[in-house]
Length: 239
Image 1 (cartoon, rainbow, N blue to C red):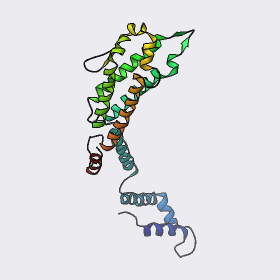
Image 2 (image 1 turned 90 degrees about the horizontal axis):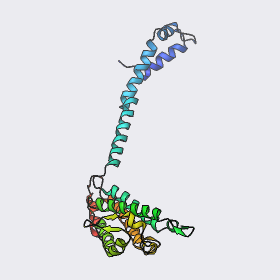
Image 3 (image 1 turned 60 degrees about the vertical axis):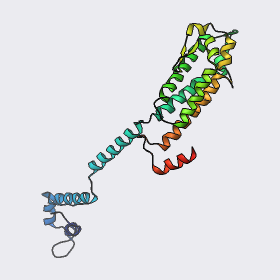
Image 4 (image 1 turned 30 degrees about the vertical axis):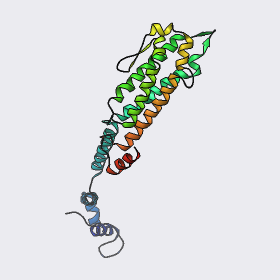
């Protein structure tokens, strides 16, 4: 049987007053403490309080860890492919912007480092191809429209790209002939990638749009591709 609040009070009061009611030391109480009875009673009391609260400290910690693990698992889940789509598009934007920057085209002793440019073009092509691959794994009207614009832009520049060693495959992906690119006309390469309104800058803009659309779709569709009826209704009214 557990110890009630009144039981605790009675025991504590007995330690502060004698049996005749006068203030003094109760040897019976002292003996209770000495043989461990008091300690057992206190432990029993607090055990009841813990039970009333519902969980012990270890149980609370265990529950907390379980919730954290569940949250982490949910955040890591990307069954829609939208999180990866966003990452790939952002990377393509970065590599395209790198090619259009002034630093990429600075000359040393009047010469342009074409090996540096070729490496950057190769990275750009690899990132472009990743976006092509990932776009085939997601279901989004907006991303589909962005991809159509991006691939159409590439098709428009197919002949010019070929002159600098960049070819477009039947699957829409880019492949780079590094040897041909290293020997390509500098002015032609610059016309494709350096500055604004070039092929590279337009791809960067569209990659940015793809990343935004992936983020928007990710907020509407959950990680398990389940849509709430309210959000779905609002979204459908906008498109």
